[in-house]
Amino acid sequence: MDKFFKLKEHGTNVSTEVLAGFTTFFAMAYIIFVNPQMLQQTGMPSGAVFLATIIASIVGTLVMGLFANVPYAQAPGMGLNAFFTFTVVFGLGFSWKQALGMVFLCGIINIIITVTKIRKLIIKAIPNSLQSAIGGGIGIFIAYIGIKNAGLLSFTSDPGTYLALDSGTIVASSSAVPALVEFNNRSVILALIGIFILFLLLILKVKGAIFIGIVLTTIVAIPMDLVDLSTLSTTSGLSTSFEELGQVFGVALGKEGLLSLFTDVSKIPLVLMTVFAFSLSDTFDTLGTFIGTGKRTGIFDAADEKALQEGTGFKSKMDKALFADSIATSIGAIFGTSNTTTYVESAAGIGAGGRTGLTAVVTALLFAASIFLQPFVSIVPAQATAPALIAVGIMMLASFKEVNWTDLDEAIPAFFAAIFMAFCYSISYGIAAGFIFYCIIKICRGKAKEVHPILWVATALFIANFVILAII
Image (cartoon, rainbow, N blue to C red; front, side, top):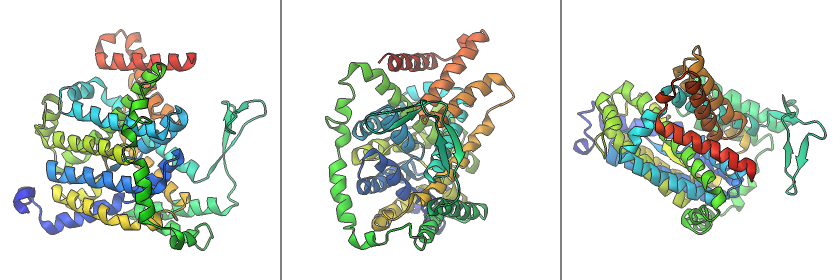
């Protein structure tokens, strides 16, 4: 084991790596509760998403540990699952089966750009300020979803300013005004208790705070009569989940999934833009985690980062780690979940001393054991997971520190990228707004030549997509 993972070379040992693996797992185990709740809103069976979440996490984390030999864990990403649900399915009108097809395609594309120089071109094409704004914007988006799921907001729209669709959905105009709800019902009070519990744990730096917070809030919900414990005895548990998984497995590649994406010629630009947004968010989410934690701890050195930008194939540990991320995304889509990405919570395990792939292997084994938690997943109320969304969103806001807000050339594109993500409920619209304003500013400054051709092409496609949506 020492020889395979090169433990002595990395200044670590088996016990330290095992402890780090446990630390990483409990720091990110909340995803097995949150992801099914997020994706089931699209019509996907919760049990299938639960198993797909775990399977994708196991596969991605094992490849990360055994192939790349780095202490990073993977799971379906926060932000990416929100994009899947609220933008692709609810906003753009695609079915969850088509959305899974896009995720699979995103994984394949990421594999291709990882083993070619395309990756280098994309990384260099997008300025650092926009990359940081995208990460921070996703944080605002996730936190906003958490606040809404907690039931803390109400919206008022004047008569005559909204449209009632045949489906029963109400589409309000910009006259809709948000407000804080009155704290006079049990659900809202539970959400507030959950927020207090979680942030107290985070402030006290309790390991696995998010996971523990979800569990404690669920326990508090029992005497408040907000949890139906009878479902624990009536549910058929894993057998039902595996039956549901059979309904979802492979759908991403079927005639209602990937094969249906290109049958309507008018929607092809929209499909391409959505896949591009998936890929871009996934890529920079992972790169940000690697660069932000790996350089500081020595897991990735300057040579790794240089090889990432200039080399092809698998010249560095970072190349191998990106490959693991891409493989897990495609496999996860086949089983039935949104993009798998490298979790920033891996930093918890790294902080506990994890330095090699053995940490990742231990984390993967714990994900496998978590399959037996399935009966408890169904009783977790939304008010217990909403604080987790808010907390993760806050953590992602750290990306904003890389933006020079006193320089309007940087601040304007960054602002629109971040704000459009949250308030338009769309990561892709945020990326589009950032790209468009960046190009406009460069043109006004007479610096159009500084804009990378890839950025010009992406911006043109985004604009074409908006035109097509307006026409149809």
